[in-house]
Structures are given as C-alpha cells and as structure tokens.
Length: 374
Image 1: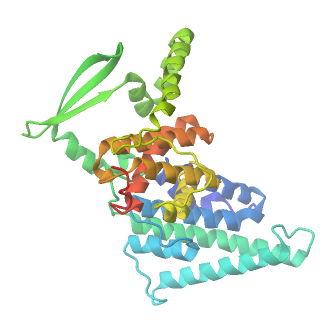
Image 2: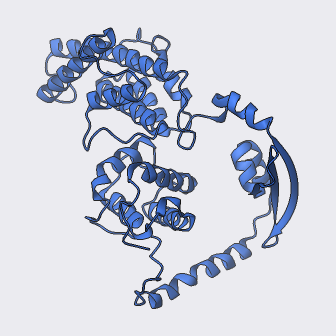
Image 3: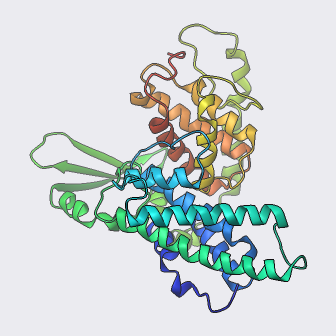
C-alpha cells in the first residue's frame, strides 16, 4: 500500500475504535488495517470487512438487537445496523444507498479477483497486482466513509444502558442527573476477615435505598488501574495461605459425583457442561454466539467445543423465568466462567466475558425458550 495513504486521511476507523475502548476486536482490526497501510496491503479487504461487521454487531448489541439472520453477509450487517439507527433501505433512492451499493459491488469484485488469483498477487501478474492495490485503496477509503456514516447516524441516539460498551463519560447528562438525586453514606465492614466498603445510596424521598458492597481490590481495578498495580506490588504475597485456600476450594468438587444420581425435581443442575457436540433447545443460537464471541474479543477463532459447551451450560442452568431469577443467572455465569477458563481464555477477561455472555443470551433467547429445568 502506498505510503501516501495515511491514517490521518481515514479518521473514522479511529473514531470507532475510540468510541468503544472496551471492544478489543475493533482495536485488533484497526491495528491490522494500519499494518496494511504501512506496507502489506494484501489483507486490507478482509480486515476492512471484518472491521465494518464488528462495528455493525456492536451497534446492534448496543440497542439489544439480534443478528439479522443465521449467516449474515456484509450487506445484511450494514442494512441491519442502519435499520437500528433509523436509516431504512430506500431501494437505491438515497445517496447513501448508492454508496452502499457501490461498496458492496467493490467487495464482490475484490473477492472474485482474490479467489481467482490467490490471496497474494505478487509474482503472478504485475498488472493485476497494481490493479488490486488501487482497488484496495479505494475500498479502504469507501470503508472509512461507511463507518463514518454509521457513527454519524449513531450520534444523539441513546443505546440500551444495560448493554452499551461506551464509557460512562459519554452519558454525562445522565450521570449528573443521578449525582444530583442521591445521598451517600459509607462504612467499612469485615467479610471473612477482609475489609469491604459499603456505600448506601438514598434516592430522593424513597425510604429504600441501594447497598453497594465493594472490595478494595475491585474498587481499584475498576477506577484506577495504576493504583491497583501499585498496591499489588507493595502487598505481601501469602504463599502458604493461597495454597491452603486452593486446597479448600478444590475439595468440594470431589463430592459432586455422589449427588449426580439424585435426579429429583429439586436437584441442582451442573454449573458447567463441557461437550463436543450440542443439539439442544439453544442450538439455533450457535452461529450468532460465534459472531458475538469474535466481536467481543473473547476468542478470535472459537472452536465448536467452546460454543457447544457454552450453549449446553446455558440450557443446563436455565429454567422457568430464568431471565428474572438471579440464582439461575448466577449459576449460569459461574458455568460460563468455568467453560471459558477450561478453553484457555485470558483469566483477566473471564469474569467480564461471562457477564456479557449472560446479557447476550437474555437478548438473543426469547423468554421461555428453555423451561425444562425448574
């Protein structure tokens, strides 16, 4: 790719990455695009397509919308995301539709050229090599324009606050509204001989409030990561106690097999179910789950065992009204964490990933989808 193509001339890829700093897949594809611009332009088509698909999935997730179909292509992703933002397809009547049409035609043409001449055209035909680079450059700029259109359409629209990945600072007016409406009281209590900060929030004239219990480690990790690392470096490391704790935590699973024969109506389902294949009630969500796991940066190439185990775990721990029963949701999150840990997912991402998987499942699986476990 020519050095004249700079990231400064393509601002919208950066805008999208900055808008959702907690979406690692966007950052990954943005870095890949920059790598192509720096000298290896032959992967730009795939990376731009993946980036745009990721933006579309993120937008749909922000508003709690499911994927448009089982195996959506780039056009279907774009149409679905634009529909969420109120820009319905006008069958070519609008200028945006014409841009989308040209963009999709360019996508198809580049895919056909790549299929015919291989992923790398160097050494095969100098004319095709130069032509492909020119088309890739045009595709790169067209992709930036499409991302810009999506971001501009998103401005002024409030996403689902339970699902959004945008940082708190983007909702300053809502935060100020809360800050002006609550009263705060704080105290410190001990749980298992460890300090816990308890913050009581009173809301207006209501007699009931909200108790937030926050461990110092979680407070530091969520608010000031630098302070978290600093305190960690100064904190002593109790090796003996950690070994004892691990032994104590590992002991209960040994007793689990003795409970398995008890299959009465009140038997507790297993928290994690690891399977190589799955054909249960949630099997229709497999492809949507694959796209979600990739877009969220949980796993860039999820294997079938991971997807099947997550779905099997969800079914095993769901039941009547599971979407409103906190005990079932808690077991489901524990199961998700165990499955993700077994598959080697980064331990620092497992807790957040399990939370987002539960949120995704609430949106993607209609209420009452699985009522076999009560």
